Image (tube, rainbow, N blue to C red; front, side):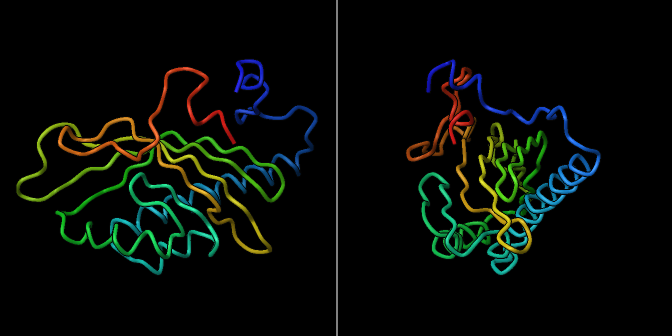
Length: 175
């Protein structure tokens, strides 16, 4: 994507000329999306597969680095790994949502804390979720997720993960 194309992306800025009703709808949509990604974190930290799958459309695709595919196929193995770990907390921070009718895009920053008597040494992982959401006659759900890893502990393999960049070639500029 060229710098010119990247500059044309709507990065969540308010649209001029919107009515109060349209702005209120966008605000409600963004709150629903924030609650959706928060439910996702709760589901992962509680290892609740049913709640986790309810965050996705059945035909969604999730790219979690070494785990890629439909959530029903991807997450049982991920949750098995989490069940064997000390408690975790997926922490969300910056959340930017771009709404286009019944399709939305999001870039949500996340970090993972690990608890227990002997927490893992070194920095804890952090990155971003790049999501496409769709509202298909019901609530918003994730249709596609790409996980961008910014930092993994030194002993973790980064192979298969999308990596962030500090320029407009970052995956967040691509739809």
